[in-house]
Image 1 (tube, rainbow, N blue to C red):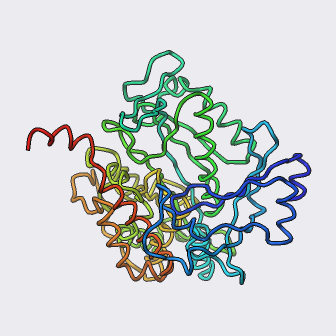
Image 2: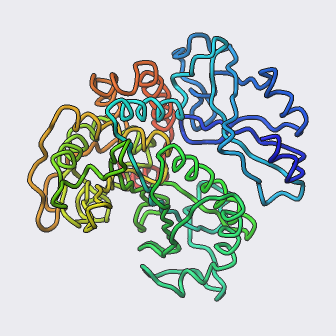
Image 3: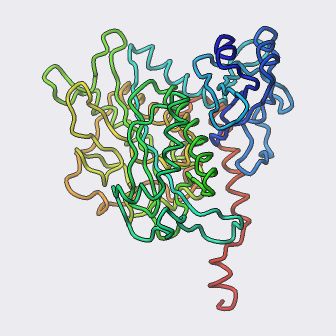
Length: 443
């Protein structure tokens, strides 16, 4: 890190800690103070940031050992990068957090993912993942009471129709994406492809397959980068799961596979190149445990608006071969690229917790030798809606799941319960415009 700072003539360093909602919190330091802190444990932050709600409040229940203690930020040298949008040479680095005795903070999202990865390692497995992330570009909205609308493109007109995979529709916002790609290249963020999705000014970016922790870091940094690139052009980039009423929602799909830790062989294919028993057990684990882990895939009240039978989002835990109506899809692939795609999560999910949750559900299926249902032929949308419909329902399922507690840890599970319950209670007190419009003078 010292070499990086000297080589790039860095004057400030942003030390980032992803919280439960995937928000980058932390501290900004002059370069010299940052380097001194590496030798003297000088970076401290309250443990309570990990139980801060999306509104900046805290739950009434104390889910930390002591909400006033500090924990120590430990910069991960593999994550140091430039921040290319500042005039002053600035670096950013993602930090882990530990207690004074050196033990990890159990409710830190990065630790939760590392905890799951260790379980795989103990089995001689290495998970490989590739996220796909959707988002909308919207016109600046300074009054939250007004609905979001598509932004004005280069043509001087807002996009109104559905332009899925439209090249010219993407080019309407080419200056934004050019800047995003330049910045991602400067930071080593490995964005693979970009395409127009089904919604008005809705975009999808794909990341290459890689290590789960590195991919979660990249998604965290990409969200930050995309928002900044859009703001430079007076546009918002939003990763809300369902930002507009008559538009589709935004997902964060996850392609996941498992390779042998020593040989690198894809364990989801057998010697004949057919689907292995381990792949089927992985799918079975996802089917059984994803409904209980929904707060990690759909963490906000808005998340459940995306899970609509009339949209492309899944409504149940069926699976199929190259079937995009199911919750879990096995794409057509060569044996060395055999994988399953978890299509349940929204773009608003914390990437660390979404990946940890998906790998945890798969791990339980694989270690318990579970068997999946038969694959669906045709549309799974014609089958029953079995995923939780509301945040409160999913929290109750999550809190009661003993297998997930064993994999993810009691303290973390309790933290999710209390933080998300506090957010739900805050939302529940808000009276919506729909209620005023339809109930004020009619009931």
